[in-house]
Every structure is written in C-alpha cells, then in structure tokens.
Length: 296
Picture 1 (cartoon, rainbow, N blue to C red):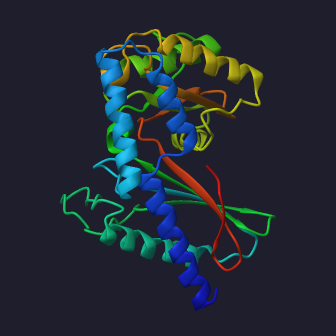
Picture 2 (cartoon, rainbow, N blue to C red):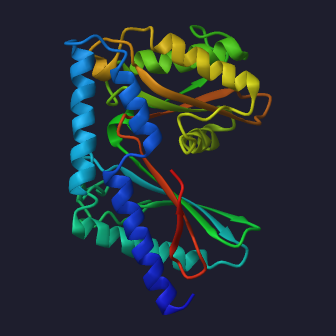
C-alpha cells in the first residue's frame, strides 16, 4: 500500500468514525419515529422518545457524539485476497487516535487493572478488528460503536434450563425474552437484539453482534428464524417495560437472529443488546482507500 493510499484510507476511516458516532443510520431513525407514533401523548414513553429524537437531531447537526459513551470500537472488514490487513489495522488505529483528538470519540478506553485512561482509545483489544478475505476487488468496512450500558445487559444461556425449557425453539424464545426481562430499562431501551443460536461461548457472542449489522427493516432468509424474530418483537413490546423502562409499547426496535452449528453436548443462546443509539455504519473502499459507497 502506497503512502498516498494510506493517507486516503485514514481520511476515509476518520469520516466513517465521525458519521458513525454522530449520525444514526436511516433505518434506526425511521424505527424511532415509528415508535413515537405508537405511544400515548403525554406519557413517559412518549417523552423519552421525544428526548431521544432531539438527541439524534442535535448530534447529527453539530457532528458531535450521540452519547457520552462512544463505546467499544468494532471494525468488521472484508478485504480482497492479498490485501495488506496489517497496514489497514495500523491506519485504522491512527484514524481512531485522530477521531479522539477531534472529539468524534470520547476518551473511552481504560486499563482493566489500573483503571488508567489511555487518552486516545488505543490499548490491548481496543479497537477490535474482525478481518475476512473475499474474492471481490474492494474493501467493505462496517463499524459499530457499542456502548457499555447495553453491553452490560447482554446475556448467554445454556439449554436445557430449569426455568426456560429444553433444547428447542420454545426454549430459545424463552431465553431471549428472559434477557429482555432482566434488562428492564437498563441498557437504554428501546433496544435492538442480536441473537446467536448455537456456537460455543465465544463464537456465539461474536456472531450475535454480527446480526446487528443487518438493517432493522430486513427480512430473515430463514423462515423459522424470521418467525421467531416476529414473536420476540410482539411479546417484548407487550411486556410494558417500554423506553428506558418507563412503560409503553416499545421495549424493542428490532430483533435479529442467526444460528451456528454446535457440538451435541452444548446448546447456547447468546444475546447481544444494543441501545437505541444504534451506532452502526459502513462503507466500501476503492483500491486507493477512497469511499465508494455508504452502506446504511
């Protein structure tokens, strides 16, 4: 990768970070607006969604972070065969440092033992990179900024479970709804769930976060999983938990479920919870590192 390409790539990644931090994607904004229309005028739920909408507009207009917690920085990257992923990672780290200096990201990464803030969001495991090769001639970068509050209310269950049931779709459904019930108003609802059925403990959580890269208005290609998503949405939004736990009709804005194979001895259901500040954005890049297309 040439010096000029690295400069162009850093500029593109900086803009990706800025937009992800400050400007919610259209599918999320549309879901928030739709939720507002279903709440009773003057209710706490309606008030919460009004405040959320105001926050969304102010952050976008001022190009400032939409939340004081700009979250864990997660890059999901697909690259052509032979692409230098090491240089990409080095360049992305420089973009994160620059974004922090410019205020697009808060100083949000601390040493887990000493508690010392790195001051630039760089350190062991920060940011996180998931690289994949593919036989296409362009780079696809998806960035997620996942806040700590919603990460705290993620959950993982092992079936069979004495309360939730057996290793079947009913047990899976009960596990997902249990995660919603345990979260209550924590995690800054209305939330979005990414779910993985199967895998091991690590791959289950990782794949559940990949489900959050889907748009809220998409349709699951697996009919059985699509029906499960619909049931979860219907039941969760009848729970009465509502935005921020204030009550109301919108506990969830979305539920996205995928599956992975498992070994016979294990059956995990892994749930990643995303807050309403669903900071997820993506771009495709050309060979020179310039942005070709915005993906959300």
